[in-house]
Image 1 (cartoon, one colour):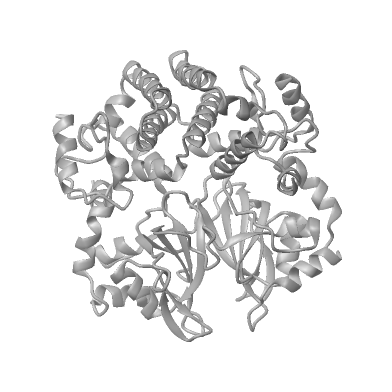
Image 2 (cartoon, each protein chain N blue to C red; image 1 turned 180 degrees about the vertical axis):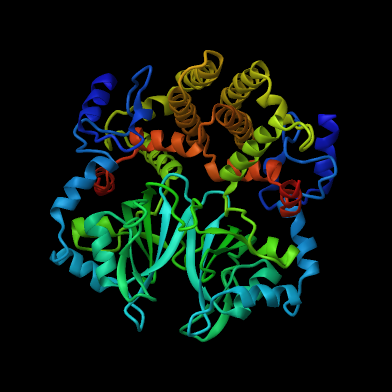
Length: 288
Length: 288
């Protein structure tokens, strides 16, 4: 039955831009897609889009519920749905938010040019919207989406690459250090260690470098850590042991990804494509 | 030598609030801490704090570099350094930003009350700052930190729990669906499946539920997926295979975490405590 469910779900899935990642040696049951689930997130986009136009009463009601400031604006923050990275922040007025919802491309209101602009309209690096969230005060908005390419006009992945604490050490601005959360800081560090291997005069010996240069050691560690993670369940060990062993699994697997030149973001894209539920399905499950 | 490096680094580490997670069955080499590395992220906080006061010329220069709006404000977005979740968004003036940097507690300027407020001053749910980032336009700021508890005044983890797309389906607001990125949406779904097991009349059969109720199956899948991930390296398979197998490892390991009641956030805390580098060290490595 599981296999049937999976093939069912595949038929209704519109594969996303990273769809080549979907090619799987072994198809396995999709744990989240129910037999009659209409679609997963990306597959739902056309449906919702078709239903909504800028003039629809639903969008009007939504726009009325936002607490616009004295200039008719609210803050909008674009966030990468897979990595959580904050890509950029702008302002929106009613038209910008309505356009974003209708077109599924992150759109803002330019305060300097007094006009709407859709991120990507010149660079083609659109931010494709998966959902839009309002905060408790209803004056701040998250655009949760997938970027087609670097978001910043400078070519950086995100607009946030200036660390205040770096500045305070050096009293100068300009060096690039991205605002990375833990997993991506680890990824970045592994990537640096990999680069250092090519230039032996740079850096010092490190465990990561050893793993990066010894496939046999790396693979034996990954298998060992996975085994130890399982044993925390099998031997009913303390919960903190599970967290600790999972950190080991994640670290060593991230080194393998780094070695192969695979980004954590690509892995999360695969996870999303396989496992994300549509808003409809999620809603249905909450009603029950 | 690796063992020596690790014990060195441990001595200089100030264990963070989640420090109990540090207890490890087996100490292993810290790949990122160099022999003479002064500290890791959390250990550096007191040092920087001591060096900076509100009146320091460095803070003055930093504040001068911000592009304040016509009301003397800029946008500040608080983000969880481990999960990437956007916790809240507020505005800052010069004093609020200076106070945040000096106190390492996220501080904002309340436009309605015309005064500074430090998140947590009444709830004690402070947001402890790890770094502060400015965007390319220098009018938008990220407070990257760890929250002591739920950030929203409603008790929700973050202030963003109202989906516009849910609203557009129902024409009503109020239901809670957090703005979750891929890994945390998966975590939430696993948690729902776990809850459904206790009430068999709810939901349908799913692969996740099978794994949640069969430790032997779950552990055999985790070991098998870890092995398949390794084989993509050993057998020089296509990169997309690595991403796909890593997604399998991550999914099954997340089910184990869910079963044990361990949050991905706790795992990332462990990773950060073990592997994060100080700004100082990162800077040094870039200079080389």
